[in-house]
Length: 207
Image (cartoon, rainbow, N blue to C red):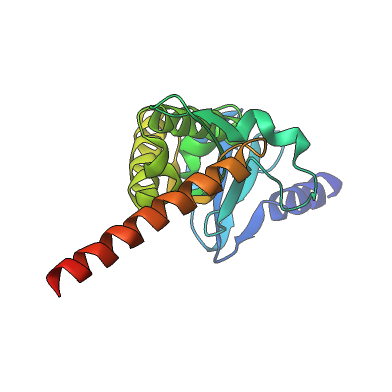
């Protein structure tokens, strides 16, 4: 009787619910068995089986060059300072938003998903910035850079069968280093004044 009662309680502990924003992963003897979708399910409990639930609809975010939880930027200069194609330095804050696309691949194909995403993202951004002129980065072609970065980053993660989908890559801020930012702004102002004078002269010539 006691054995029967124990078995009933043991088996009943294998009944579980997967919420609407989750997938469940069932392992038997440490090996993948199945992925379960939202609803009630059953698996053979520990020590035979193991269950993991993973949120698949949550949008995750990785920040580079800054932290929204910190007002100090000193610790992030290694991430944010990059060399451009025309041999200038830019100071960039950017972020990546991502979600889990395939739970099995996400859990079993990469050991540390967050570290993998951060390493791949920084590598992609540095490669793109190294092939762009400063003006492209600071003003003219931010959207183009973001789209290129998203495509390259997704290709890298797909090659790992990571089960990760990149939602967006955003350049939040792009400036010259703080030591020369005032001089850079003076140059930009001078360029704007030059264009204005040319336009005024052209208008006068037309008249």
